[in-house]
Amino acid sequence: MADLIQTPQLLIGEGWSDYGLVDSGHGRKLERYGDYRFIRPEPQAMWAPRLSAWDAHGEFVPGSDEDGGGRWQFDRPVPREGWALSWRGVRFTASCTPFRHLGFFPDMAPVWDWMGDHLPDRTDAQTLNLFGYTGVGTLALSRFGPVTHVDASKKSVAQARANAELAGLADRPVRWIIDDAAKFAAREVRRGRRYDGIILDPPKFGRGPEGEVWRLEEHLPGLIADCRNLLDGGSRFLFLTVYAVRMSSLAIGGVLAEACADLPGRIEHGDLAVREDGAQDGQGRLLPTAIFARWTNPG
Image (cartoon, rainbow, N blue to C red):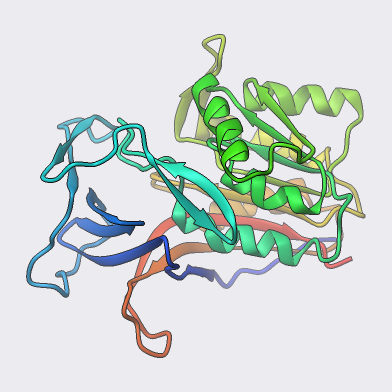
């Protein structure tokens, strides 16, 4: 029976050569993406910035709607078609999207490492990436075996496939699927499929390719129940991240605990966070970005 660890955990992302959190404060953050720097809104940065002034190529100015909207303002030229970055040798394209982010989620880097740690020496692991977006996590998983990448956005899946080409990984065994994630998971259960690991990053609200409506608080328990039915006692992990919701990590940990009660292993929950650049001895300021819950089976 999987045990729910009640003490919250921290999963901390550190900067690397192509990304870093330079500074944060007063509801904003300054980040570097290769040769370019950008300012974006960050409500959880309630403290004062460390630096007296921020120098950036562009800034995303939010609209009045707290659920989204806004526009980019640029002070210096930025390639509108995007520019190449890499993580652990996986190359991909970053770009300034209309949704305030830059085409990937850098705070997920420690999650990608964590998944690899739980599939050591595997080349045949069957994994599933739901809400896979532009595929950096999928490419990270692909070195351990076949990956099924699912996203409702044709544009995101096209970018994911382009990232695979850019990284020289187009021959990896990846199924690229444009579909509603919840409907796909339900069909996989009916087909009797199973996976060694599942990662999912559902939005607060979304629509599938045929107009299907997704509301996190309403539909997450059912999706997690289907994901549980795609796992067995030999599976290794399920990792769930949730952004931009008024919800505790203990709540989503409880959803996993209910669904995975009959599996071995343990369930943890907590915060994803990114450490600011320039930290000495791992003591730099941490910016929380999302909550997570995960089921792990050490085998």
